Length: 206
Length: 206
Image (cartoon, rainbow over all chains, first blue to last red):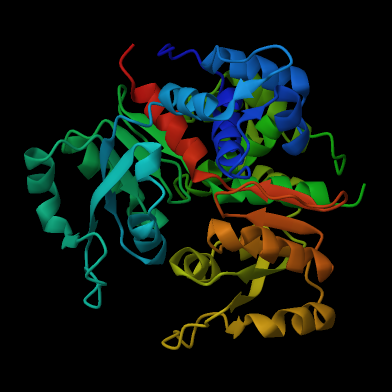
């Protein structure tokens, strides 16, 4: 179950299944692949295959036990092991990510943000935002696996280089630019333009 | 070129090509599919096929003219036609999207935000944020195609229903819940948990 050979399409669907399962009415105890497929507008066969990959709890006629299926998907996605991250660039997007409560249940803890000019009027309940000069020291003190880049495009590569030089092994990039990372460093680009393009292309008249 | 039968994978790669092409050094006039493939860690054959779908400017030995290729990709993605959108839920993420300058060049103009409690200390340079009660009137006055949902999960479905009842034909959902939309309404979910899962699964030791 920890093989890296997992299709991107499966990974894309699993959080969707989780959302759906968690938002079902309280009293729902069992759910069939067919019902999930219909609700999410997916093919029943794909859903059946996906669920078989992550859970062996499905039974004929009865379907999946909802709580077991949720637990199996979360285990597959390794949600119980928390990975530490730091974030660079505490503008509106950066602060939104810092303050978003939903990542921890997905196995990510953003410990702290860094910014060339940390905001003064920061909500005390929020995660701390430190000046950039503290970043190397922080990384050598704490076990940080992921660096989240939320700076403007022009600064993104130099921030990326800094994170890599501090030993960070995975970059989650929200800046709308291409980044070069050395071999062995993972790079995941978050490109809102992709979703937007998908939506707009579908809206075009034939 | 306006067919809707465009693979999602192609749509995902096109904005990446654009970013890369636009961020090349100023003096770069020509670029080969091979160079693009290497820079973006993609297969050369896929890149060649992708570019052939959106541009007929590639030539043996010379490659693509950079400016022409940028223009062709932007035309394919319909970036010159601007689609109007409104945003509901002006928390940190909502405000980050409202203030993000990069959407207009991708063909999206977020005209205004709505919130149950519009923030008082709003930057004057930013897009206006109006109370929710103004939403139906706004939609009947202006030509709004896309509704962007940035409210908490518990409110997302009722906001979605409101947008649909106001005639909005495409929903871009940033709330981490499954939404039901009637047939004929497009739904694009922006799920950060997907990218995060992809990154974390790759980080797992074999």
